[in-house]
Image (cartoon, rainbow, N blue to C red; front, side, top):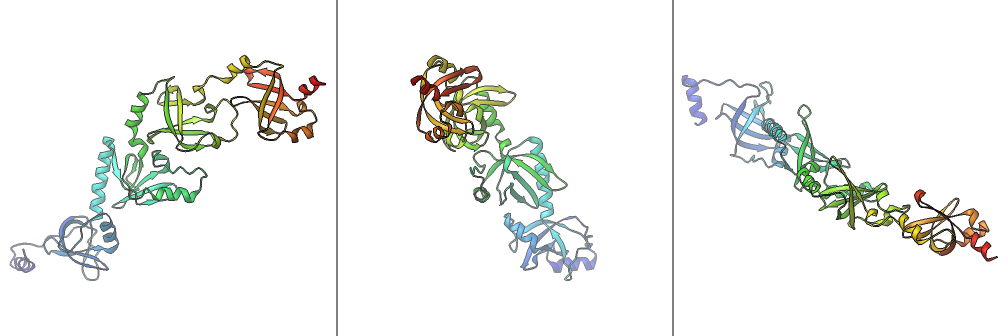
Length: 364
């Protein structure tokens, strides 16, 4: 029906002018674009609607077709929201948001996996904006393959790693949806729930597995299978000996064989050191009090030095057992080899004491 035909029918009473109601859905066709927004011929010429320019930019960014001649469904924002030209302000986003909210609620109830594309990032989360609804993916909810592993904690490097994820498809599950605030928390880790359970079902206490170091912290190595599922090997389970610098024991991407030492209610305990016999059971068979041991100086402490006795097990040479204390300590250079007599061996207390002075006294 043309505008002229409609006006003629209005005049002869064939049709009556429908009442324009706030928040009512209307059908329309784009008739003009401009800096102020997009004009839409609504309900076959009953009135002209205006989609404001700010909304137009957001809609086009999300792929909405607003070219002249395209048909659309919109919502009247209010009968009192009228421009000086007599245009009613209308919105597509309002309807889109409601449709998105309805879909989100349905997907959350069904525990579905969603595919989202982050558009913004900061040091705390990735952000997806879909028709005004904010979708947050906290860094803690990213899978190991996407988590920004920056060993020195440099924030610029972390941010650079997050920027690489913008525009990429990421599978997530909804873990929280605040409809009042139009915010939703998403988790990539939760999307891997079934994969994690599959791996868990395949693990057995006592078995050994090949994993990869995915992260390093002061309290241990994070290791992963396929860069999707990750657990911690605590520093106490990396080696039997003293660990002064964990960085020297491995790097990100290094393979690491581990042994499962515990499975309890979805939690897994891993050990690297238990792949080998406990050296404290071997040392008493290899050495006895009075033996002379040659080992490298590996660590200085205020009360003496430690030398390597067997594998990564060290023994203490106390200051009082060095002899001429000041000169003796200066002579013990790091990584130099030293001979000392074993004067105390307590495997149950993890304690080995040695003496340089005892050798000298025996030679006197």
